[in-house]
Image 1 (cartoon, one colour):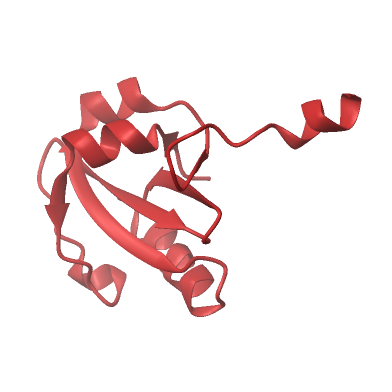
Image 2 (cartoon, helix red, strand yellow; image 1 turned 90 degrees about the vertical axis):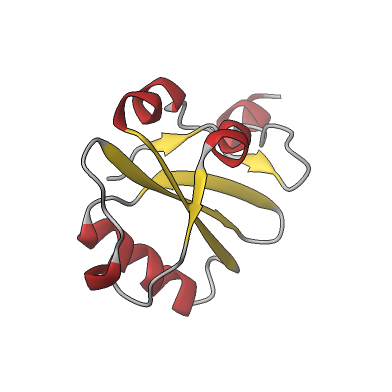
Amino acid sequence: MPLYLAVGAVLAEGDPVPVPSDASGLPMSPGRRLVAVVHNGEWQSALDVSHPAAYDKLRKRIAEGVWHDLRLFSLSAERVVELADGRRVTMDGLPVPDPGRAALR
């Protein structure tokens, strides 16, 4: 399971990289990680796709229509760990409400 990161920080701090059509074209650099920012029209998520299997799975989900857009960013491995928060955000950057908490109300 990929590591999920803070979307806003990835967008602000990440270096944009070209999106390859498959994992064989992933631009990997020593000490760097690849983070994908994707959205479904309502909310967005940032996840570490440095491992080729994670990238291929994400591309499959895009082909299935689960995600509508893919942007790739390169960040240092240390910063990726610091930005890991596991949260999704709405398209305007607000946190997505936890469905478990909404059910308790």
